[in-house]
Image (cartoon, rainbow, N blue to C red; front, side):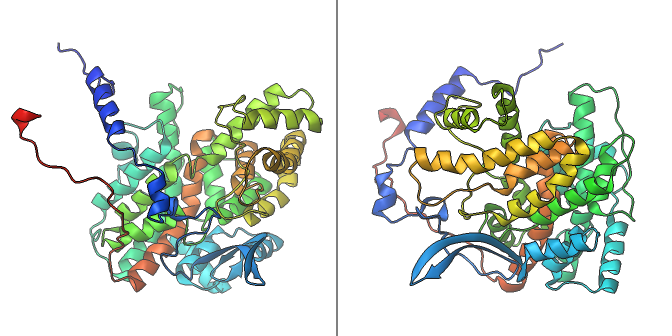
Length: 456
């Protein structure tokens, strides 16, 4: 029997090739200033390069006063509606709102009661996977990172769709709705498969979703062996889904969706591309880092009420002397917001009830202290072009911990919510776009003469 080949091995030849690759790909940093290139499509003040127009959502972090941009409290709008008022209205009624927000983002208006009932009924009908999909796709070769399983599942859905390539708006909208409905199943089933096949857990259970339940309720029901959850748990998770559903047209995810859609590709490829963008730790993985950082904080700080001890630890984080030694306080700061992140403000409002139910009041107190102290420490120690404040990842990781959601599902939960926004951006690009998005890159390599193979 032949020896099993290790396809993951890094061989000496690969190391040698890597060294050559690095040597021949370093671009002199001064060239970016010379050619006025904004790396990351943002200037030093965090202003994005204008690449498109959108009606789907808006992020506001500055006001123009006497001709100058001045940081202000962050605001987020979905189709012109303040997200704080959307969440407030839904919470005041004591109902679940993610489905209503998905309707708003995709169709452009808030639904009437009758329209919302019909929309939720349709999503309920779409909450099922093709025959044998779980066995043939999700359970085979499960990935340790659920985002990879999720992207593969979405791409494979193409094979089960007889109209996969049809770019008519009716067909694309149908595909978007089906992905919104099935994303929780694809995520949670992938998590269960990884636990059983890769981690050696003794049990493997698959709960079918309930068409009558909300997305938040179904997530908790499918994830837990006993299917049980409290109203408080489900409502806080619903609010988190609403806050993650969309975030302006200039973020990496929305831009990816527009760029890939502009090529004329199918819906499954476009959404898979957005998933791959979200997987990156600079984007969707931040709340996992926040969670890990706080576990480290709790194990190294003796008195959680001692501001001086907390401040000393935060300084160690910035000095690369603690946690992962990256020099970062995760969850503090945002590419756009400086004074405040409205999503973090909203989510924080609903944490007290959940913390009380879970007996985690001390953890919430510690988070609140660090939320206050971290910006002070950062401003004292770092050169800053704008202020910093807690972002939504700072609190979402705590919410998921309180709900007993495993770290592996933190980023997939982001995807479960954001697929509504991705669908809206895809529709917007198909309706308004008529050209492939093609940014420019300045070539800076020197010209070279060809040398024959014998003379190299």
